[in-house]
Length: 347
Image: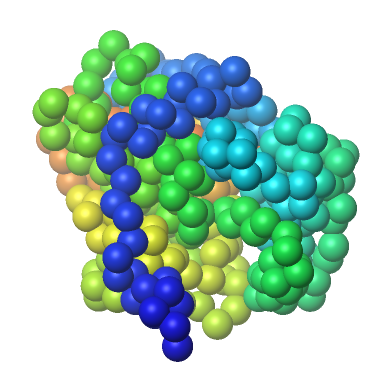
């Protein structure tokens, strides 16, 4: 094993990003993205007895925060005179769209490797943005196919295991902290491979007063929570089953784990909570919320049950891309008859 490969596996000698890296990313990507709004619901705040502020990344270009990391990585390479002409990525959906869109904006070719069972609307969107989409049997097969093209000279743009991706993802939290009229006591972001939560933790360090940062994760896909508790990276052998399709990563990487282990905690959400909050946030905020995004609220609601009334929480809603078939499943039975004040007392 070479020294470089050993460092990649063990996490040794990996750079540690600072808020300055996120600030640089914010400046770099500003002309290419939307500065998404902060949303809230006074009714929800009254029900829960807490102030909840939502960063609505479903209103981002391509409908998810992934655009931030993808465009930041390519723009950073362009600044260095190393913008690749052929890019490959593997994805469960939103990263595919982000890479396809970012590559098209900068005149590069994108090839996307996806598992056959990903949401059709997400793979169709990637193709619409100009990418060549190849379907493999499993997520592991898609990753292997992407690495095979990397060996042939393509630039591999991973969904989270890259410093410029992490810095770009952190700009969502940075913007929210800049735009919010009040400092949150805690920030919640959904964790899959760890890029968004890592960037969120880095961005939160810009505050002069401490802000707690928590990772949110489906209970059915809780490799990050288990890794956090055990102090070592836990991996799934096959993609976990969860309605939060953007949180089905097999494991984190040493690069993202070095930030996740510094979080204030990981909070796991059962599937029923994720579906419940997908419905309620869509209703209250009047915007599309995908289950992966709702996982952050489901976890925040569980955490708030242990806190005194009057907390202010920032929830990063990671995206709003919902496949029509998934939407039918999510809304197969309306859960709006049980209001959040009642629901949270019973969960």
